[in-house]
Length: 126
Image 1 (cartoon, helix red, strand yellow):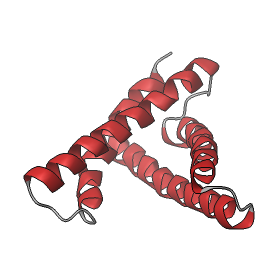
Image 2 (tube, rainbow, N blue to C red):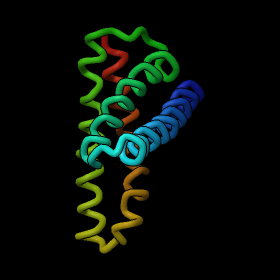
Image 3 (cartoon, rainbow, N blue to C red):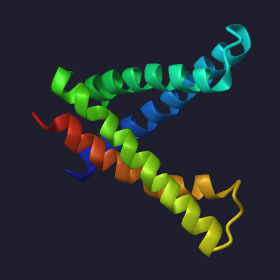
Image 4 (cartoon, helix red, strand yellow):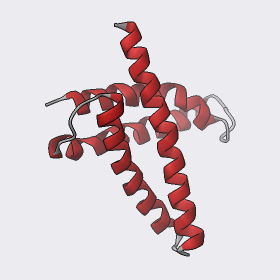
């Protein structure tokens, strides 16, 4: 069982890396090639990368069939990630004096596993 979870988590982490690259490439393309305002470039990149992440996590990480119900619930996983990251950033910077440039990296050690668990529950639910 542990090997399965480790393998599944590794796939999740790899997809997260790929998805981050896709987001950043789309953001830069919107910003520099399309000359869009940074807020518009950000939101277009987020929407496209979340859709891509949904399909990659369904097919590759959790090996479930993508459905409209799963697709509708999937953004909740990102809401959890953003919320936990924000809370951790605040606590690390304000309470523990961690450098604000390093704090997001420290937060990854909590947010990636928690997002993995939440995403698995959301996508594996019928």
